[in-house]
Image (tube, rainbow, N blue to C red; front, side, top):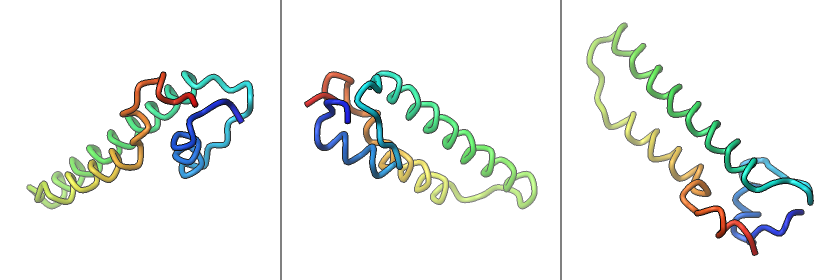
Length: 85
């Protein structure tokens, strides 16, 4: 495995990512960011669709979903230099 910090290595494994020794951490970070943006957009779309069908929806479930995504992708909160051992 690439020379990732142990917490980063564990976080990647939790997301189902097992990088090879030659994996560029910057590429992994870009991949995680793309997944995060996709999931945020899916949550927003689901909320809009629900509002079109059922009318105004409470904001709390949407906020909880967004917070859950922030926790899931916590590695994005680390600067890239902190990804290394």
